[in-house]
Amino acid sequence: MNKEILKQVNRLIKHEDVNSTYLSRVNLYKTSTFKPKGPLRYDFSLILVLQGKKIGYLPNKTFEYNANNYLVVPATIPFECETFASTDEHFICIAINIDKNVMREIVESIAKEEAKSCKKTQPAVFIDDVTEEIQDVILRLLKALESKEESMILGDSLIKELFYRIATGQNSYFLHKMFLEDNKESKIAKSLKTIHDNFNKSLDIPSLAKNEDMSVSSFHNHFKKITTYSPLQYIKKMRLTKAKDLIEKENYQVNNTAYAVGYESISQFSRDFKNYYGYPPKEAKAI
Image (cartoon, rainbow, N blue to C red; front, side, top):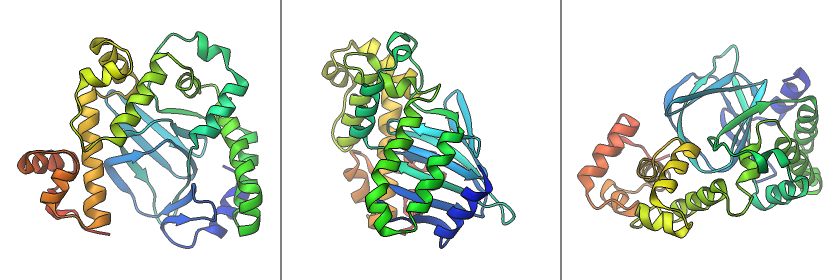
């Protein structure tokens, strides 16, 4: 990432951790602290690293995103992540929530034929190279974010331009296929939303498969290829990440949290939470 972009983003960042902007879907993040491997969840997001790097871990898949590439998470996928940063070189990134309606409009407009003809089912999370065109729009977006007026007038068009560049990236097949009706990627994407919206309810795999007009075996197979998790693993991780949010952000008690995320057994919830995060839920602290 060029020096002008780094100079511009540092003018906007006021403190370490998350910095909001005039655009609600755009946040800036900075840290000088190395963060060891730990659970992380992005919800349909674009992550542009400006300095430093992160290494993400999914079952049987490791990926590095840094200043030379960007990460696209076009579905809610929990994974583990390691952040590399120091006082000499801070980790800095831009996190942008992707608007599904805007992305659908772009994808339908460009109708990438390679995606339609590609039969291979690939993981939802993907990395692509940062191009000169992407750097150009990033710089213009950062400059607009200095002004509330410019953010309100120019922000949406700049983000849409950025989404277009992402949708035309060489690895953007999943983005295209998830918006094509009646294919497996689109069906699994809808099922992920169902789980995301109903994580605290009773969820069974046959019903999820039936909702998408898929056999249980086909649903399980494509679900794992796209998310790298089995449906049951995914549901458990989704519930545990929601539980952590309730405890840390809303000061829920452990018992209430377990029931709120769909667990019937408090002891099972506590065991699963500790196995996932490395500490019991009672030690999670409210922010």
